[in-house]
Image (cartoon, rainbow, N blue to C red; front, side, top):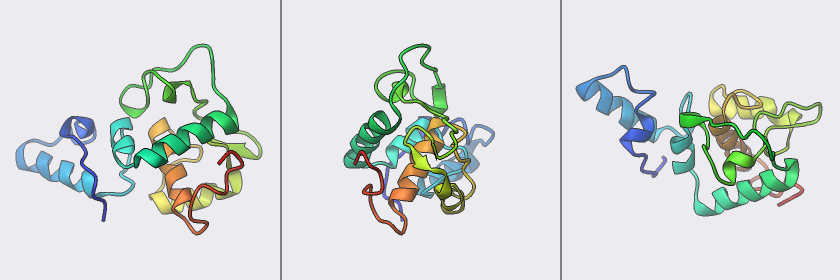
Length: 148
């Protein structure tokens, strides 16, 4: 079971169609999910430990590099500024994809483990949680990345 606190404002968009008790139930349900559908950036970050966050940022910068021009403003589903915003999100290359340089052969595992996140992720939040799902998988840890 997940023991992370996710502020209600972070989840407002996915639960926006609900009101009153239904909204509270929706927010509670999403907070309990390890890999919620269509995660917001805040939901993704709330599920990471400080170690996981620092390690993924380091891996992303080392494995796939950063972009210098035209940094995307992802809003609710991704970073607006800072080091996370400079990662190369959405990379779909022949062998390694995502901002974290994940081998494409791992895409099916990530989709299965997360309940259908895209590979590469449709949003930076999905890419972050997909990388965490892989790190928590059978290999256990970040040692599969060359830049770890």
